[in-house]
Length: 620
Image 1: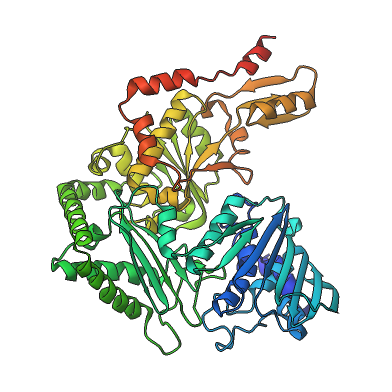
Image 2 (image 1 turned 30 degrees about the vertical axis):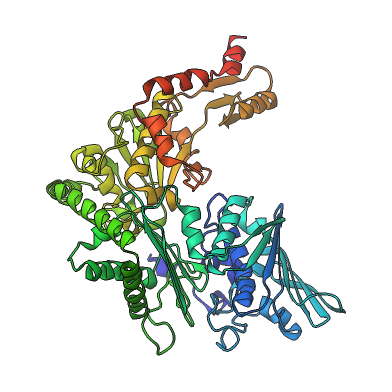
């Protein structure tokens, strides 16, 4: 009997969902992934952004210089001092799809949200949602729960300033247990201030404001001294800031109408093209574009009428025109950069000389390793599902150019036993494994030539597909998985050094992680606890009582595949490797990975830590 004969298909199978039911059933369509707050692109932060976008749009239109944001536990409140939503439409804008003022460009000419969805998604995905508008002495408040209206009342408030107040609690029934990472929220708020000079964002009592726009952004995000004073150019509907560092990658911060387009788009592609073209013409030399852009650190912000993004989360611009029927995004950026950057270089010959020298040095190094690159590409062809180094996931099977999947991850590990445990435990659809042979080379102070001379690094670069730029990175999460012992820590440092030295954007864009695995297993005949810290171990012992069995895991290979599966599934614990302006990268690498052996030896001896409590407990 065929499948079709077993399945009935009638009128009762056709269902129509209302707006809130559809959002709650398919939240990913509206806010991307859900998450628990450990990643910057988790849905709980998108909810904040959707509300904040509306308040920032008011500021962009010239209304309200300050926005107050508070987070207490799981409750978020945002109060702006703009015009306030028209009272008669307050409930509609929070609960009726495709309702908003942004369809009429006269009211909101260049805003982020145009589809009337954002605030409705926040409402539907919140267990509690309150929206209040104050206008000219009158106030209306509407309360919702899971998108269902609970109450609606008006009052007279003669002393209340105009504006909109929103308070919400993201629904744990949708998101599960979650917690806001205040650093992620602060980073989001800082970006808003860089793009809106003069805007005051008051977050939990602290005020964020920027006077110099994208210039402040570059200075706050650089972890090294710039090669030359950043170039800051502003025009109508466009602002750019450009400098170079000492690394090998390209680093861009791109924005559209105040929205951080973390995946770039048409404007970022045009900007990269414009910089290379302008520099070539200025020096009247046919430099390779990659030589010009190597180690560039730049930011671009443009304003577009009715922007077209490639997803509801608005992380990549798809628009090709500045406005309906207007000049193309590409031509607009090319014209602006060509005119203004060329003028700047003519007026600042010292900067022009520094930049020229930089490009020539990069060109010289590139030519020196061109032969090695050819061999590297031939070697890279070996990187497939069957390669001895890489056990790929199915979404990349026989396809090195497959676009990065948000769920994809690769574990970089060392040793046959550790690699074997992860390989047998992984989700073959989304999790790949790259096996190192022994300790990798210490790359501190070396040039990029070492990547092509060292087979381990060559194959790793090819597996990640990052030789040209980060846009082609094949895995959303690159995870270092090493033993929790001295050798494992050393391998971890060597790998981090490699990425810091040659591919810092992998870290800067939040793709590099450390796998956290349990240090202890505490169990009796009825229950088992896996503990990641000494504190967790003590709690497990207290919970089980009566001399439970305690195992100290010293290597990944000691954990059986069945057990390991519990640590790399949806309960995976990852520690993100972060890089900020406050991190003195070069000094840290010089101390830990350089040749100051005696100083480092003294430091290690002075900070040696022994698991004293565990040893004493085992002895007793």
